[in-house]
Length: 473
Image (cartoon, rainbow, N blue to C red):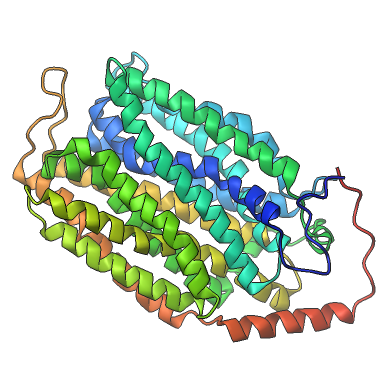
């Protein structure tokens, strides 16, 4: 049995190696999400040469599918019974399809625009299915590794260190790889292959290096409540509604900025060569502040941490709106400050979610991590899709000029430039303002969570001792 990453049944503190192994599992999905957020729309419009509205529609179709498959996979993983636990077999099975479909997303086959539209719809549906099979069970592992309030925040800081680090490295290197190729189509093909391989490996690290707590394995038989009833129960959980609202708002704001940033630098500021360094500033600061906010959250409630970071982020986005072409020196420091705020969107909602799962167990007697986490992954992908759809539709309506071989960087009309500015400033700022209210009203404080755990411990102490956990790998 592999014991290197096995948490003790008597101690909810996790070893460095457990956190490191778990954290590495978010590397692949973060790279996939990050590259799609920053570059997929401009790949569709400027490389595959699709109409912006058609490009946005591809992602909107996928979200309809995700509305079903994310909670469904979470529900299935709750009910999975194997010698390897509930979650890890899903991660193992989805790894190769995930990498393959991610590569195929960046291929431009010799089809007509209609043919390309259907090709990307099919590939995107397959990719999102594989992404779900890997990511929903992976994220649902968090409450199964530890019950400790602060350890869960620490565990998520490792996870998002890999997440932000992966998004950082891939976002910086991707345009360099593309520009070093003889043409953009070849560059995207090569880059897609490189990152597809990188995305696949971490899935196997998690499978072989992580094991759930024995107490968590005791729940792996699941329950007989139908999926639709479990969804109703999850949405009836008041703190959960705050968490998913907070996450959707912050993630939608992040994805709006991500989807339009390359357009902003290329067409409004006229500095496409500054794309890698700007992304480095945002993601690099996010990486550092994951650990800063984690340290702060050990003294203060998670909701206060979110409010401070989101307020800073809101101010920065408004600042980017008022910058004018030629004021290039202001972009980089503002991007770095934005990263400090972006870090709370990665860290805080996911650190809140295990506490909600504990409350649900106290109220219902069931552990349904898969259902709760399935909705969170759905919201994550919905944020990307909604942002790309909105930006694509707005650009099409505003008269965006699609590049051609003769004019690879066309001059955009003022209406398109105004649409780009709107999505870099007022739109995300308004969404973040709404998220601040949700954070203020979130009801599970540090004290309340301690009460929940004490009540669960008292209930378990009154039950007969459970059967021994199944033998390990």
